[in-house]
Image (cartoon, rainbow, N blue to C red; front, side, top):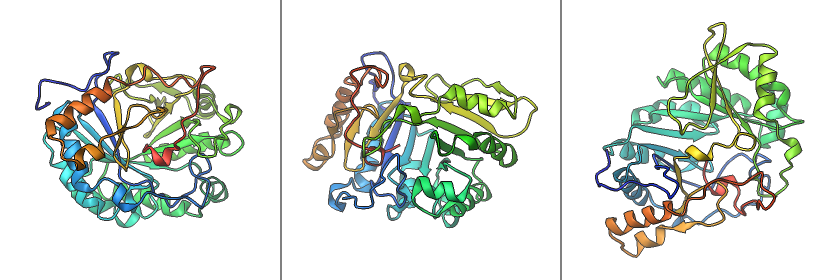
Length: 334
């Protein structure tokens, strides 16, 4: 329960329950739809929020009704001593879910310590089960490390993770049913995501996007699916189980063709301390400088409240006046 009488609620009546916290802009992959360039200028260490600053802002957000925290990047496992941050966040009264999104490279040796620190669950990115295609997409020969990380997650006692796959025409759309087989054998929840305009080269082409409907059709050519109920209205994925009762789950995240903005409950905190109300926002709201100049908790809370009131009604991807934001996903946080 919030520690104050106020909630983070926007002018459209949506209550913010989910805070996405980017802990670093750095990533050791170079996925072409995110950061294809090798010569990236990363943020200076002093520009990033310290763990103490992240904890303070998380505590304020939870006091205003946030229940779920998710650590993202870049690649969050690249931030030194991330287990320390997890341990502190897990102790905040009112946090019901503490998750982390990772590319899983290096997760094999850290899954157990992440769980011991208090992490609730993991989401893992994996865009191909074919080594050559995986390397084409990520520019890294790391598929086996990712698969080992998935196995280590469950060995450590986590529930089967969600596996995020961005489906891109001409690259991996022919693997959709294979990923469904992977869900059936491993028990993971596959999440297929429509390709979005968030690349730093601004080369997004809608013709490369595979719609959620087509993804379902490709899976159902092999396995009959049955719809599953959402746990809450703000969930981004349309969920399906296998009609024959096999383990595993399928989710479709279709922000382009089936926008879910109307039930959005998210606020993002970037690694350098900006609040961001939508992935596709053109404006960031700097809260780091307010912490460092000595604003009180009440003043920081009011800044969060005021920022959420500026939250956009939707992302407008399909509108003729849509403008792709200048920041790519790695500099926003997933």
